[in-house]
Each structure stands twice: as C-alpha cells, then as structure tokens.
Image (cartoon, rainbow, N blue to C red):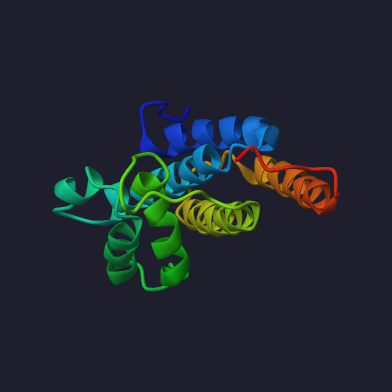
Amino acid sequence: MENRNSYYSIACSDFNYLKDVMSTGYCNQLAEQAQRVAEKMLKSVAEVTCVDIEKLLKSHNIRGIYDMIHRVEPDFVLDRNGLSTLKDYYYDTQYPGENFIIVTEEELLEAYEIMLSVVGAVERWREAHGLPVELASAREEFRLALKQQEEKMKSPDVMNVF
C-alpha cells in the first residue's frame, strides 16, 4: 500500500481535488492549485533521486527542483519555460503587491497543460522505477473535463469570475 504521507500521495489528492473544482471559474485559485500539484509531483521524484535537497524541498521553486532531478535523471525532461510560468502562480496569484496578477482563462488552460505534462512525466518515471501509479485514469478524466471547459469558454454567454 502506498504511503499516504508522501509528496506523491498528497499531489494525487490535490490533483483529484483540482479536477473536481476546475469548473468553478476562479482562475487565480485554480492556477495556484495546478502549481501546487506540479510542485509536489516534482518533489516526489526529487526526494527519491536527489541528495542534499532539504532546503529545496522547503521551497516552491519548481524549476530549481526540476533542474536537480534532471542532473541525476537526464531522461526526465520537461519544458523549463513552462515550469517558470507555473512557478510564478504560487505567489503572484495569492498575495497583493506589484507582482499580483489575475490569471486569464487562456493562462489557466496553459497552466493545466503544464501541470499535466509534469504529472505525465512523473507517472512515467514511477512506472519505469517500479513504483505504483495512481493517476492514469484520472489524467484522462482531467483532459476530458479540460476539453469541456475549453468548449464552454468558447461560448459567448460564459463570463470570467473576475
């Protein structure tokens, strides 16, 4: 049985929560949640493959976490620019100040795609290392819900919450 007190299990729980609330229209909160899923997924790999990363595990720098993983696992490849975009949502969507942003629906869809690429890469890595995978069917359900969300956004009577 999978340890429920792990980055991977918590990321899976966060992913399933996001899947359930993704139609709410609160773009900032949803983008931040997508960032959290990606962060925890990456940390689930880093804690197994990397050494001397305690400080990094306490940060929210998903690009830095990815870089550490990639040094040890060169076949673990993600788009660094996408990760950079996603990492900004941790602070910039939650706290007032000069960096505060309001995430658009298009940016949210991009955040979902980046998150799904991270989830897919982590799931493939886990399979290759003989570790259990929890989100195979949930990823497809999320993609279906995402497609429905995109179609809904194209409808002229849909309005952004902000």
